[in-house]
Image 1 (cartoon, rainbow, N blue to C red):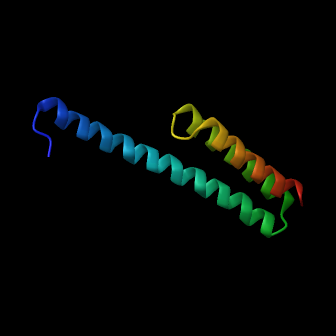
Image 2: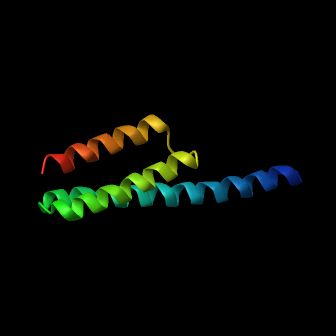
Length: 86
């Protein structure tokens, strides 16, 4: 375990960041799943609305440094392809 005061602080900061990152990643996965479910249900309107929300969450994750830009682009592209296939 950490001995110095600064090392203890870093442990606390790392844990706080891990929890925040985990929450954002979970939110992104949930929004992606909503798009996929709407596509499977053949609900074009719901899929478009869910896609818009998913884009927003992916962009937020990139801006916070939780996800790389290309990863978010790839996910957005794949979701858009599914919605456009309706």
